[in-house]
Image (cartoon, rainbow, N blue to C red; front, side, top):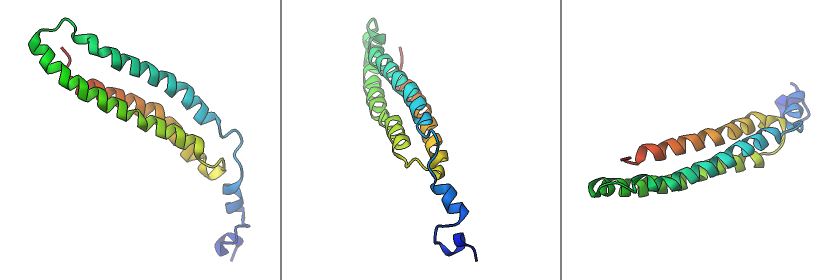
Length: 127
């Protein structure tokens, strides 16, 4: 019976998983540099989208306003998802066993931002 089978933690499998990863901060940093500016831009576009119906008729405005309010509220709450994924990618222990999880979380942040923005665009009844 090997050391990894007994659970003593001195075998090569456990030692390899608990070793510190070299440069574990690269994926979260790149994701942060992509997600935060894109999130700020998406928020500005979503906030300024209220002006899309400035010259609308009364019927179009009655249709647009409630859907925009709902869509914008969903968008603002949905921004918590990419933020949470970024925080999770930064907060994982910097060990070899977490490198795949860290990469997936870091990739998930900008992808979830795009999905939240597309959800906003789909919820609003545009004129």
